[in-house]
Image (cartoon, rainbow, N blue to C red; front, side):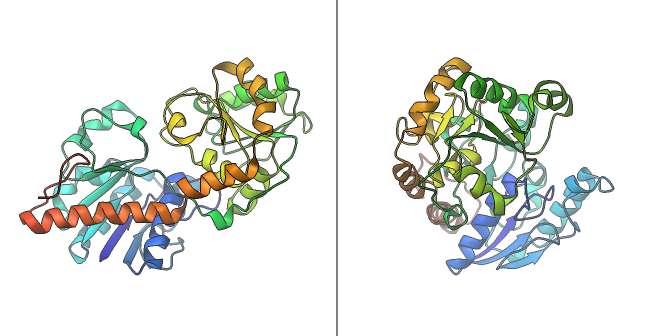
Length: 351
């Protein structure tokens, strides 16, 4: 099987600090290569892969103001689809833009929907000839048919288990009202524990007005973006990860990364969280800062080994790769039996 893996180009694949979509595209590409699949990763030219690398964008446009993301994404998609006839399947991780040109793809397309940035982009999905994979059952549009839900997988080897943990709390993710960074500060204050904040600043005003004034290097510390090499250390040394989201989280990579390190999670029951968190095993689902603070001690008392074991069973890269190979098989079998790109849904059998 020859697969074109179409990654985003906002960041390098795999990312050096932030870039969840790029991270998943990388984990999947490397896992498929390890299973003997012929993978060409279409990504920034400074990306790394055990497969073949192709692309046109020199490096992530989010890291270089001289690059216009709209231009380089269009060039990137055009380049990949021009080669699409060389592959059995194109796997799109780049949101709606490739879908606008899906009719020009000369191989079946599967699109992992990493989340809808805006309801106004849904027409690009509903009109395109692509099979859709949701990353959680919670993040499904009623306007689309899906071939499967595939939860993300993580590199367990890069996230070693920490039996001891620590006393501090951590919040990891982009600093934005959606992610509830300021709420995490309030939760830690009520709980009487120090808080470590990690992530890129996505909302400068929010950071300046509601986060930075509390950062004193003691009760609240800000480490900036933490890359893969430091993420395990930060997560593994915490008593719990706080994830007080103010939106319907499509998945939440930081949540499962913390679990893999043995660190339980205290979060709100929005979006995918009820699917991802095993109540009283890997964390607690609560409503509001007061309830979250009250849950911190209970979370810190959970069995960290059980937390790791559950994450290993449910969210490994190996499991994700197996799930996607099943998706690919369904799509290619459907095409072979009909001679056209007939997209199977999760509920429909292959003809």
